[in-house]
Structure formats: structure tokens, C-alpha cells
Length: 207
Image (cartoon, rainbow, N blue to C red):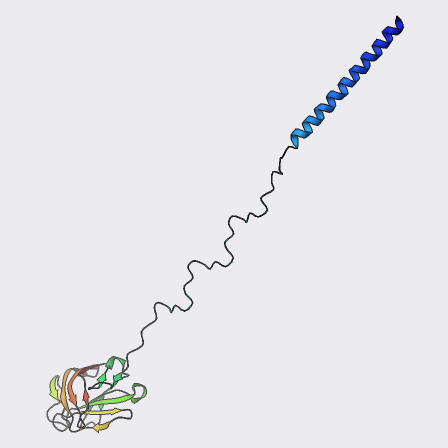
């Protein structure tokens, strides 16, 4: 009887031990399997995703102007001092390096001299206004004929390789003297024609 009870006790201890080992093994296996079911590494980005803010390497700056655009504020080319292409010689006195001599000549026959300069103007237009030589003008303002022997108002024109008319006694036209003194001059010239037929368009000399 004692042997039977000892045998039963031994069998019960064996069953209990097997049951504990199997449960522990099963729990460990189940937990490990659950953790490894298709979970990717949390910080792995897709291998071919570019950084979101990378611009294309060859994109030019959006505000680059075309390389050959000239500056918007380029000044226009200056107007020439003289134009001989038409029927009349056109003189732009604003572009002339004019010279004014209010007390030219000898003391007994002073005159006013207004002229351009061959260098750099490329031509010479001279107006000599004598106060004694011609009896028709003595220095006052007003309108007078171009008449070297009559009013003492003489003109001279020389254009590069063109006509060199000197003090042309046969030149004609009119001058209106608005100012002519030691401080400056303002003279309108109209209808100026030289003895060889050269015509100068009307102009105003100011300086």
C-alpha cells in the first residue's frame, strides 16, 4: 500500500513539472512571434525618395535677365553739331563748342565775335558784328541785315572739305539781336545764304 502511494506521488510531481515547462515555453514562443510579424524598422525611409526641398540642379534663378539685355537707362547718341545731308546746312548750336569774344578788334573799331570751332565741331561758322565799320549798326538790339559793308555784320563759313567762304561780302540774311554785351549773347539768324548758293537753316546762337 505504501509503495502504491509513493508511486502515485511521484507521477503527480512529474505531471506538474511537465505542465509548468510547457506553459512557460508556449508563452515565450507566442510573445516572440507576435513582436516579429512584418514590423519594419521605424526610421527607414524609402530608398529612392529625394529630399523634398532639393531643386533641379540646372534651374537658373527665376529673375535672371537675358545676358545680352542692354542697361535700360542707356543715354541716346548725342546729336551732331552739323548736318549737311539736306538742301540746307543744319547747325545744332546746343552741340557746338561756341566761342564768344565781346571786345575783339582794335579800340577804334571794336566788334563782337561769335563762332564755332573747327576742332572739335568739324566746321567753322563765324559771325562778326562790327560797331564802327558798318554805319548801319552801332551795337544796339533789334533786327538787321547781314551786310558786311553796310551794317558791319559779316559771316564766315568753312565746312571740312567743303566750301571755305571766308568773310563773304555777298552773303545775305538777317540777324535779330536779343542780347549782345559783356555777359553773353542771344542772336537769331534767319535766311542766311552765301554767294556760292550754300543755305544755312535758321538757328539761334545763345551763350
